[in-house]
Amino acid sequence: MVGRAASETGRVTERDADTTNTGRGMTSFRFIHTADVHIDSPLIGLTRHEGPAAERIRSATREAFDNLIGQAIDEQVAFIVIAGDLYDGDWRDFHTGLFVSLQMGRLAKAGIQAFVLHGNHDAESQITKRLTLPDNVSVFSARKPDSFVLDELKVALHGQSFRQRDVTDNLVPGYPDPVSGMYNIGVLHTALGGMAGHENYAPCSLDDLKAKGYDYWALGHVHNGHVLHENPHVVFPGNLQGRHIRETGPKGAHLVAVEDGEITDFTTLHCDVVRWSRLSVPVDDCGGPAEVSDRIRQSIEQAVSAEADGRLLACRIELTGTSNIHGELLASAENLMAEAQAAALGIGDDAAWIERLIVSTQPRRAPSVSADHQDALGDLRNMLADAGKDEGLLQQLASDIGELSRRLPTDLRTGVEDAALKAAIDGDYAYVIDHVQDYLSARLTAPGQ
Image (cartoon, rainbow, N blue to C red; front, side, top):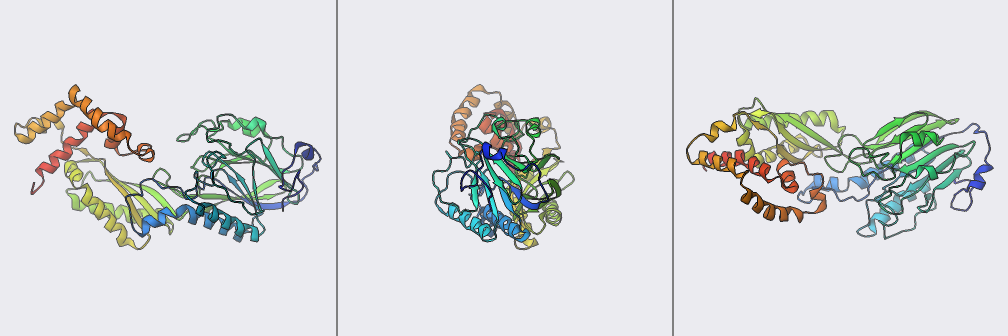
């Protein structure tokens, strides 16, 4: 139950807080800290894929949240803290909200409270559709810092939701002082001064958080889990479910046990149903595509055994090394992808799925050797070698390819990892020309061409 407060919602004002008991007394409780659930997030790169594995990945954010709620009930926690980005932005329809209401209803039936803070993806300005959530759900205000007190547990939670997506102010100084005699939990969606790969929303420093006097900081926004400090604990749980290849490894939430104001147990609950993995496959010593296919199959099998933990392993395969068959690999990339998919299916249902295969090898032979051959292929190579210096050609490519790349959807333009496509988007057309030399040579010299 939400305890004494300034209103029936469970909020407590500063005047109310001043009257709190000075001693914590004998209390013990457990809670779950999660963030960045991104329910129904559109998953990047799946539009071209079909089949059971792709469908499983599309529904993964829901399944992970369902798993979390189930574990909360099984563990009989007192409450859940969601530190931002429960949603991924405005809903396409009401089914997203209905799903969340169903899960919160499961918690209500089990007598578990949920405290929700809105982050940059589910800020007030980002969500136009609304559904009334069950009474066990308390949402931190976006107008000013908000507090909720659980009298029976002697717990006070403090936080402020985002009103709009871009919050550039340090919110920590406005958070209330810790409530005396309570276990104080600060809830904040922040990049903590700009952690790599994340927009610097609600910037603050670790010293800001430590100086506040709270016992636990439940953070969100950074998708890789970090325990930045202990006593007080300052924690990013990471996101609940990896959504693409830049979110690899196990994902989940934290189960925290507190007795007499001290953390006695801190456990990670792995709620993800799909794990993402980058497989670097060295092929320096491979004499042909058949050997490369065997190497790929072995790599997938080893990764499933070591990393999947019974979950679907979504893999990106990158062929690396200096190879005599570099051009042949470029020319047979589509067939190698099919071989990788077949190897994944051969392991068993829902064991592995291949998101992409990238040929990142380098030719063992020096380019100048082949360029000196005075035959038709040598002439082509010489022409391509000079093309990167042709200002007229580069301007034409900038006009044609540049216009095409500008029309690409934002999710395809951001986070591009394919070297040639990234070069095209960045306007490095000399690199694009250089990149196609080995591919064209391999295609023109392949049997039957």
